[in-house]
Image 1 (cartoon, one colour):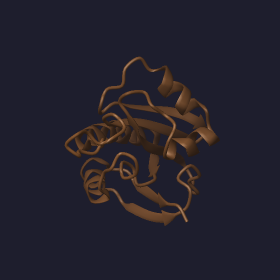
Image 2 (cartoon, helix red, strand yellow):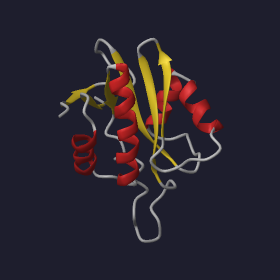
Image 3 (cartoon, one colour):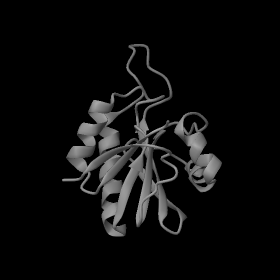
Length: 150
């Protein structure tokens, strides 16, 4: 069982020792330019360039990219399109988030890393944090820090 810690701060600047993976949700259509990705792009260009260069975006996929000696960024495809569909269903796809987090968790264990994230899936993707937290508890075995901005 992992420990989930909530802090106030910037998820792009984890203030802990050791290897860290910063997780965030991407959509499945190649759109990058709103939400948390803006903060990532301001700090590093690698996650955006890699995401934009992908030929296809499969829900549940996760790509983990090294951006510093002890920091990686996980681009997780957990959002279908960028707006709610005609039925009012938000873009978040919880099963895809779970699949992506399982992949990232495996890499985190190999790297002896902790996970760091804003409240993924709950901004533009329209998800509910209670559902994401439930997924984190079910599929992640490393420690997680969740960041809320001041």
